[in-house]
Image 1 (cartoon, rainbow, N blue to C red):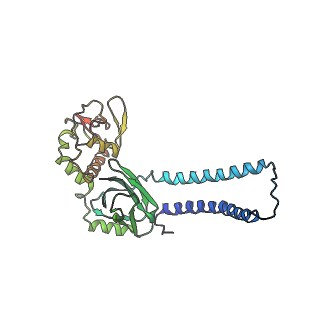
Image 2 (cartoon, rainbow, N blue to C red):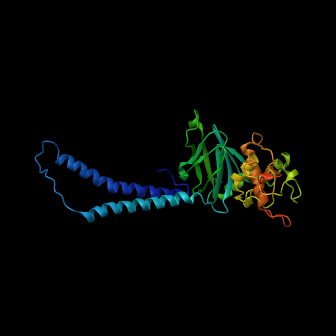
Image 3 (tube, helix red, strand yellow):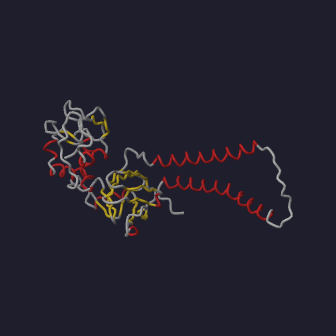
Length: 328
């Protein structure tokens, strides 16, 4: 067994050993009886082969019901473990992950960026928001017992809490091309004070955070001209929008999460916000996946801000004067 480097790993191993134990408990008696019958009733052996029919309804119910209940119990436990990976704690450290043939790229919220290496603090929940620039990849860290497909054109999420400082292998678990075997890396788990020191050495600071860099891109792409904070631009103010429900044309509402914000930038005509015309141009091909993560960080910072005056926070969509939710 690999080392257990997260609290999740211990639960996965316990389930694995329980399933293995059940398989052994049922499999060994079956194989022993099978071998016994093969020897006892083999060809040429003088034994009584007359069939004896007996009604054994209680036994039949028992050997059907007991394995069924055990299987259901294993499924419920496994489903609970799987579902827990979709519910990261509110205070989780958010790290953006972009991958392509043949590398992993990580962006920390305070600024440092890494390639094929991920430094995280021990004892703190870490949430990974991931996307691919080309084909399907799969982030796999055996020591943490976590694995999640990373898809082009959308975001997938994964979270973990590392408990054991050390260095652990990072793999791609989805065949992604001829150099698939080269797409590996390392996860370095540091004590909290060691992680803070690593951040300082990496140039972390208020001006280098993802949100600060996103503000620069927001102005560079001209987003600030339409999305003024006072709500008087061609598009709505983006204060208080990310993470809230957005009214769309036709009466629908959609949550302004990462997926919606991404589509609003690249596919602004898909979901048009109520009250605005679909005139915003698409930025597909002009903004890379790394820059999208930076912009989303800034939009989430605006989403945590209070909306000005009486302007409702959920006035954004990929239409606002065609303007998209938090889009340029």
